[in-house]
Image (cartoon, rainbow, N blue to C red; front, side, top):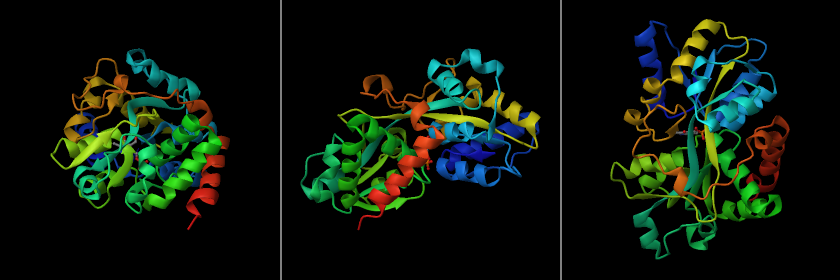
Length: 312
Ligand code: PLP
């Protein structure tokens, strides 16, 4: 199993599945863009059976390139429309397992020490007083950071969106490999702001760290965390068993105890009380078909490398 969420949730999924079925799971945790690249590299000799978790766009790109397999689970009838929309967009090669909105978390003590207003909007992250004090992941490796890239392009238009990312670059101290790492850094005060999925900042807020999760005022994008069966899986029947099980309310309930507060895709699964209320946020109408297509994701990442990351 190639796992795309936080290590603790990955472990809970693999050990519980092993216990319930007797099927042994070998699990590796990687960011979404990295797993996509691995599937591509291993296409002629697939080593994985199932890719569980991680943002939907790279899953869609893998589907688009025929790296994953069509499957219709009996559990589909119990899923929210947004989870089935992923399945339709992927031509049955991927399905939604959870949803989460993008935003940022800021360290309340650091912001106070800088004497600046608490950031509430994307625009606030361009404040020169945040120079070298914002962290976000690299969109090539991280699904979170690709969601940011695709979100600002959809929210602001491509030219203004890239202007925003170039201006933000001045404040970014480092582009991390993993999407959630900046939340931990902000909770520890190693950076004033971390751009992350809001639920990844909530993890630290609920344990009492001085971090405040924010849904940006201009509006924001979101992810459909996804699952796909890898084409050429050597253990196909077991992959299907895992897939069906992972869509059940019982399996989806393993998230919250593992400190993962996304919204589950099964209508009968309990939404963790800590999960950010997506219905109260201004969400963009994220075009997953376009931004998950192979051509568009490749084009935007190449442009970001050239026009943003290459800046001094
Ligand atoms: N962490 C959690 C809890 C997530 O839900 C996701 C995305 O689905 C990620 C991290 C994304 O990881 P990355 O940005 O490293 O691909």
